[in-house]
Each structure stands twice: as C-alpha cells, then as structure tokens.
Length: 280
Image (cartoon, rainbow, N blue to C red; front, side, top):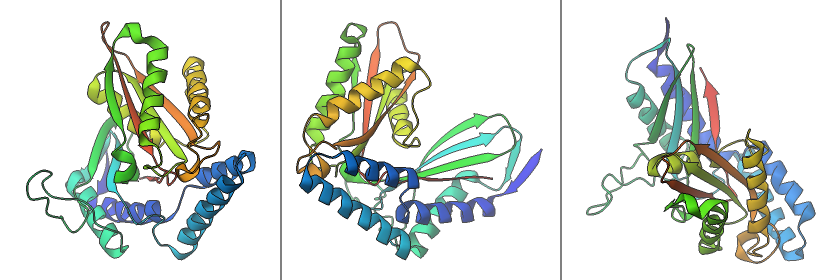
C-alpha cells in the first residue's frame, strides 16, 4: 500500500488556493474570447474585454481575480490503496489556512452561521466532498465559490410529470432571478436526479467541469445546448447590461432517482469560474 505524508497535502492545497483565486483556467479565458467575437452588443463586447483584461492582470501579478475569494470547496478522490500518514481533513484545512493567509486572500468564513457570525480569520473550514476510488493516488480539485453566485443557486423537488419542460422552466427561472447579481456571463451547473442533496452536489460538480466538455449521454448533451440557447436569449448579457452572452456554458450531471421524484438543482457560477486541481 502506498503511503503519503499529510504535509505534502498541506503544501498542495495551499498552492491550489492561491492558483485558483489568481489564475482563471485557460479554457474559461478562451471561451470568454470566443463569446466576445460572437457577441452582438458593442457595449457587451467592451465588458467582456474588460473582464478578460482583469483576468490577465490577476494572472500576471498573481493577485485575486475578484475580491470575493469565496468559501473553499474541495472535491477529493482518494484511492483505496493509498494510506495518508496523518489526518487528511486537518491537512486540507491547514492548507486552506496557509493559502489564504500567505496568499493575502480575503477570509470570508464565519465560525457559526446564525447568531454570532464571527470570522474564522483563515477561511477554514473548507467544504470537503470525498469519494473513494480505485488506485493509490489522491486527486484534489479546489474551487473557491463566491457568495454573489452561490446565493442565487437553488434546489427544487419536481415530480416526474414535470418532465424536461419543467426542468428547463426551473433553470431559466433561476437564471432570470439571478439577473445581474451573479456577475454574468455565467457558468451554470445543473444536477438532475438522485435526492435533494445529490442533485445539489451534482450541480456543483457540473459547475467546475472543464468548460468545453459535454455530458457523455447525447440526450443530456443536447439538453445542455438547449439550456444555453434559452439563457442567452434572455438578453441579460455581461454584467447584466444587455447582450447575447448571459452564460458561457451550461453543464448537466445526473443520477438515478426514485420513481416518484425529479429533484433538480442549479448552481450558478460567475464569470470567474475558478478551480485548480492536483493528483498526488
């Protein structure tokens, strides 16, 4: 069985925090550029250019793309033949503490959500999702998630009779309700099926897929394209000031569900679709 020192994970997560907050993934940047060329509104073209310039400055100077460096969402796939020498969860949170402190990233987490709401002062704890897989490696994907987009994310328990049209209606209603408040152009993640929490989790996973990927099932890939077209016809546009680029991409993930259920979740991400990953 392969062993991995938890200190290596601390260093890796620290770097991921800084990289994700300061460097927009190249595929997202390229998608923005492609959308700018197709954008029909002159003012929207200017806004997209400004967004891209901001991302380039952040990349060159290693400063945050946005002042809201988010709560830290971490997806961990750990091989069943890997043994971590130390506490994995503590290592991830220590990496977050170091990354947000040494990287001069804004600390946004409060220790308790309702009454005192005192800042933890190091952006921990992270929101961590684990999955056990085959092999002896660990894959860590880290995605800072700002409140402006997360606040507009929604879950709804549809019924099977609502069908595909019900799903489309709910997704469109969610985007319209978000309007300019989530800093479009958006990346929209949609989770369908499972249970309430599984739909929400899949919508989050969908949000941070590589932007040019499509669902492996051609039916769901077609749904992704249809939803993108519907959203971009709303005219919300970049930063909510009009145009044909309200969303850069829509990604859908699905899971088997109960015969009497059709749960759907929509996770909104702003134009700063930040994520970074490492395999150890």
